[in-house]
Length: 135
Image (cartoon, rainbow, N blue to C red; front, side):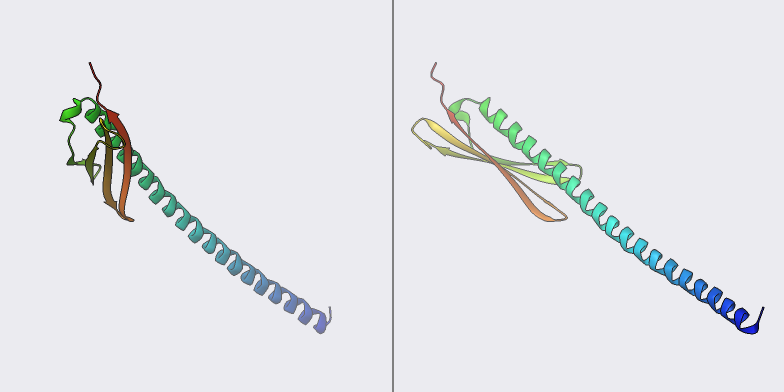
């Protein structure tokens, strides 16, 4: 084998090692970007899951308040507010009454449930209309 053949062969082997190193670095870079993107996505999904749980709890509290109000006599239905804690989150359940709305002998009842989490203040509102039952 001649000297130039050996030199060419060494140069080719050396250049292949360099390409392999560059390819490995590029692959690691792409893996790092993918992992960071997936990590960010998973964190967002966990936050949305937590937020959905709190919304579900708030709607359940509003429904419970409407049902307990419905169990009262028409004249005993009054506005009020209370707090309830679920899993470290404090909810405020406020009931508002509007007499003779939308017509005489009816009450428009609105239940607002508010709470605060890591994403800020949240609120759900549920409305219904009750009328006095004549017996």
